[in-house]
Image 1 (cartoon, one colour):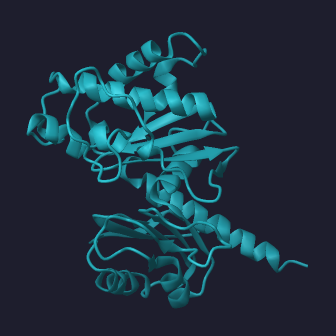
Image 2 (spheres, helix red, strand yellow):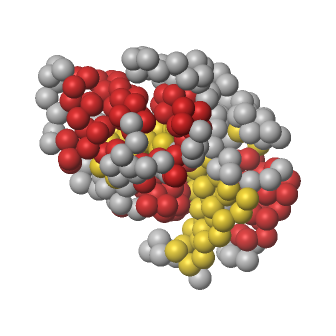
Amino acid sequence: MTYYGSIEAGGTKFVCAVADEQLNIIERINLPTRSPKVTLDEVFAFFDAYPLIALGIGSFGPIDVNSKSSTYGYITSTPKPGWQNIDLLGSLKERYQVPVAWTTDVNAAAYGEMHLGAGKDTESCIYLTVGTGVGGGAVVNGTVLQGFSHPEMGHISVQRYPGDTVESACPYHDNCLEGLAAGPALEKRTGIKGQLLEATHDIWEIEAFYIAQALMNYTLTLSPEKIILGGGVMKQTQLFPKIRASLERQLGGYVALPVLEDYIVGCDLGDNSGTMGCLLLAKEKCEIKSDEFVS
C-alpha cells in the first residue's frame, strides 16, 4: 500500500500525517517546532515508516514560492529563531524523491476548506486564521492564489479603533492586522490571555472591528464567494455576529453582499483544514506528475 504525506509546518508545531489514496488519515502526529535539524529528524523518523508517493507541505512563512528563484522552497525572513533561510522543501525532496506540493500553511487550509469543507460549494474563498498570529490564504477558480510571492493578509494596514493606543504586537508594523488583532494584542490590552477572556468583555467589539475591516478590504479586492475564519481566537464564537455587523457598517452599503451568515463562516474541517489541504495538494501533484509520463 502507498501513502500520501502531509506536513503542516508551524512556528509552534509540525503536524505530520499520512493518508491512503482515498485521503483517509492513517496516522497523524504533532511535533514541537525546535531547531531545524531536530525537527526534521523527527519528521523523517515519522515518514520513513511509510512508502510515500507524494507529499504536500503547508509552511509558516514567509516562504519562497517562486519556482524560478534560487531560494525556491526556503523559509525566508521568518521571525522564528533559527529558521531563517532554511531550505525546507529541498531537504524533504532530497529525502523522499517524490512529487512535492509546496505552499503556505494558510493556503493549504484554504484549499482544504474550499474543496472538502466550508467552501466546497464555491469556486473561490478566503481562509483567515486568527490566533498567535494572523494569516490568510485565497483560492480563486479552484486554484491557490499566489504570484511572485504568496499573500500576507495578516499584515495589511488597518485604521485603529477610536481610542485604541495599544502598542502593536507585530515587530514589523505599527498598524497591521496581526499587530492589532492577534492573540498577543488581546493580551496586551487586557493582561489576560484571549482564551480566558469572558465572552461579554468589551475587547471583542474592538477585535471585531479590526477583523471586519480586513474582511472589507479582502472583499473589495478579491470578491470571494465565502470567507472562512479559523484559529484559536475564532473559537470565541460570539465574534462571528459582531464581525458581520461591523463589516456591514464599515462597507456602508457600497457593495451588495451575500447573506452574511453564509458569507462569513467558521471552518468545517476544524484543526484538519491544513492537513486535508496538504493531502489534497499532494494527491493532485502526484496525478500531474503521472500525466507528464503519458505519451
